[in-house]
Length: 320
Ligand code: AKB
Image 1 (spheres, rainbow, N blue to C red):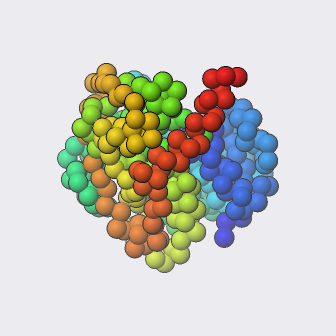
Image 2 (cartoon, rainbow, N blue to C red):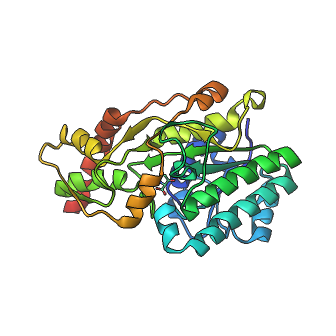
C-alpha cells in the first residue's frame, strides 16, 4: 500500500483528476500535488506546492520534506505541440523524467511515468500492436517516450527502483482539456457537438487511434502501482486498450444523441502524419495477464456519459 505520494505536473490533463482520485484512496494529506504554476483546485483539499520539475534540487527537497515513497511524474509536452518545438519537448520531457528517476533512486521511491501509443511508429504492426515489437517513433514525443521506457527499465535493473508505466491511448475526459495532442479532437468534438452542433476536425476521417475514458485511466494507474511485483514480467511500459475509432465512427455515435451534428474536416498535415504513424489498435494481453487490466468503458457508454455530464454544464455557461 502506498503511503506518501508526490505528483509532479499535477495541473495537466491526467494530474488534475488523478490527484483527487488518489486523495480519495490514500487520504488527502498523503497526496502532495505539485506543478510549475498555481492550480487552485488542487490546493483545496490537500497539500499543493509550486515545483519546477526541471530543478533537480527542488524535486529532491519536496520528496525529502514530505517523506515521499511514490512519485507520479506526469510532466509532458504532447505530440503535436512537441513537433513545433522539438528541442524544448526533449528538454522538458526528459529533464523531468531524469530528475524523477534520480530522486527515486536516492530516496528509494516507486515511480510511475505515463508512456503513450505515440511510442510506436510507422514500422510497428498497425493492428493489435503487440506489447513487445518494433517501436521506431517518428515524433520527438514518441522518441522521448521510448527513451523514457528504456530508462525506466534500466533504473529497475541496475538500481532496483520500482518503476512502472502504461502506454496510454488518447485520453477523453469531461473535466480537463488536453493540450497539444494529436488525439485532442476526440475531446473537442463533444464540446463542439453540444455547443454548436458542428465540429471541424484536424485528423483525417479514416484514421483509427486507441482512446480511453478518464475513469479507466485513473483506475489503471492505481491498479498497476498496487500490482504484485512478482507477477510483473514487464514494467515500462504496458499496452492498454479499451476502444479504437476514427473521427467518422465517433461522429456517428454522437449523432445517436445529437442527430443534426455535422462533422467537417480541415486536416492539419502535422496531425495527419503523426496520427497515420501510430497504431490503429493495441494488443493489451500482457496488462490483462500481469496485473488484471480490464477496461470498463467503451465508445457508446463513454459518449452517453460525456453528453449527460457536459450538456447541463455547457448550457449553464452559455446563459451565465
Ligand atoms: C497525444 O495525442 O499526444 C497524446 C497521446 C496519445 O499520448 N494524447
